[in-house]
Length: 417
Image (cartoon, rainbow, N blue to C red; front, top):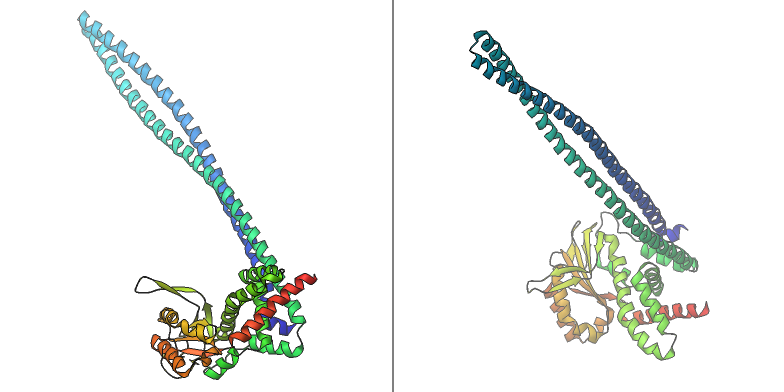
């Protein structure tokens, strides 16, 4: 089992399933916590509204009392004014003095009552505003709570579904890879293990021979990579399934083989290059878009970020990089005519590696079938573009045969089920 784990990181697949389940649980907990917090805010807002309503009602009652007292003081004032007018008319000094004293007292009482009533009105108005704000807060809190419940519920359902689908695919990949590896002979398993588990020696530069030997992959390694792609890459799996379905009709065999040569072989070469160079860096990014000065753009097949050890691909500029630097790679597989016809396209693609310390085009060994003159033209043009060519991939015919056999075996296996 240790070999199988090291070959295709099956243990990592299981850990990924566990991690996804943990993430799903944590997401549920965070969503529940968010909803609880929103419900607490809503409850607090309702409590504030209730308190504001009680205070407002008390202020209204106090305002009514103060209004009654003002009316009473106003009536006293009117009576006192009338008595004072009558006393003045009587010309009785004693009566006039008593009436004037009562009028002064009534005036003071009315002034106090009016002031207290105005204060009560202002207090009631402030509590009116407070109640209105509290009412708005309740509406906002309720809307927020309802929105969170709706959004969280929808998000949880979608994420749970996607995690379930993802875990199902990962588990199927784990089972399929385990079965595949169990069918390998010890010799083949060791060969595949050595390739997939290779790491550069710490503190030592990686030279062209090591790169050459890894890219010159055996049929066992190529088949293992195809199997790995089949069970882990959804797009690749669907392509193979579609081709298997087409192979059910004998009339489609030539057409299917042509599609395999165009699509399956190219993807295999990319994976071979990724597995070859991947252990040399911190991370691999594929199909990164690079915008050119003329407004167009190109996509880099692969950029390896952060070389762990120095890398030497050969002699010349941009053929070597130090620790921490980046490597840009384009991948081309095809016969000699195809490789030569792609010269201008590869020159443009090379511009996507301008930020990399090391850059190259890894192509199939078919480049050596070109005449010396054409081969030199092609190599010189790519050197001038900043991405020298390395003809280190298996020959296109060998790759075609391996990929065609792989798809046909899958199709045959389905017919036998």
